Amino acid sequence: MTDDRRSGCPINLTLEVVGDKWSLLIIRDMMFGNRRHFRELLTKSEEGISSNILADRLKTLLEAGIITREDDPSHKQKGIYSLTEQGIELLPILAQMAAWGYKYLPVSEELGIRARLLSEGGPKMWAEFMDELRQTHLGHVRRKKGLSVGERLQAAYERVAKRNDPA
Image 1: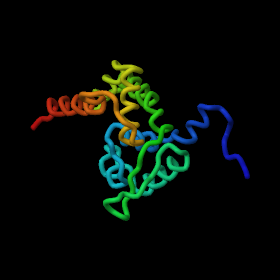
Image 2: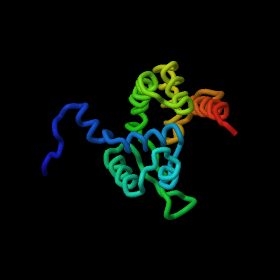
Image 3: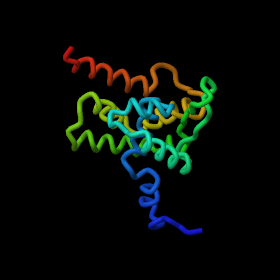
Image 4: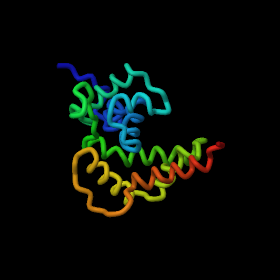
């Protein structure tokens, strides 16, 4: 058995799993858009991933233990993808990447609002959101009452999008 890794560096090893553009965007869509079916991941991404790339990246994420796939009880040929604990624990990394992008790049107001709120909310908000993701993807029981972080982020996005809608 050969070892295909370039090195044992933790940054290198992480990049070998999630270091391409599409893998992180798939994880983003599962976290922030609750997209859990192949068709949703394919058609609702603003970046326009192709079906063969999506299938390849889902396979890689499955093999790495970042996501799981279960048969959808409502349709025999569909699968439901879920984040594992490993996948959920990528949230702080995505939040930091989003904060950096929000600070230094020309992001749109609508797509930047979540980054701003997650940055302002910091690790406490991230932990709460990870608990919500554990409920959605792992079946854990949510302890907090009221609007979830995911619902607050979505509501903020919708407010900005509505305000910026020229129609």
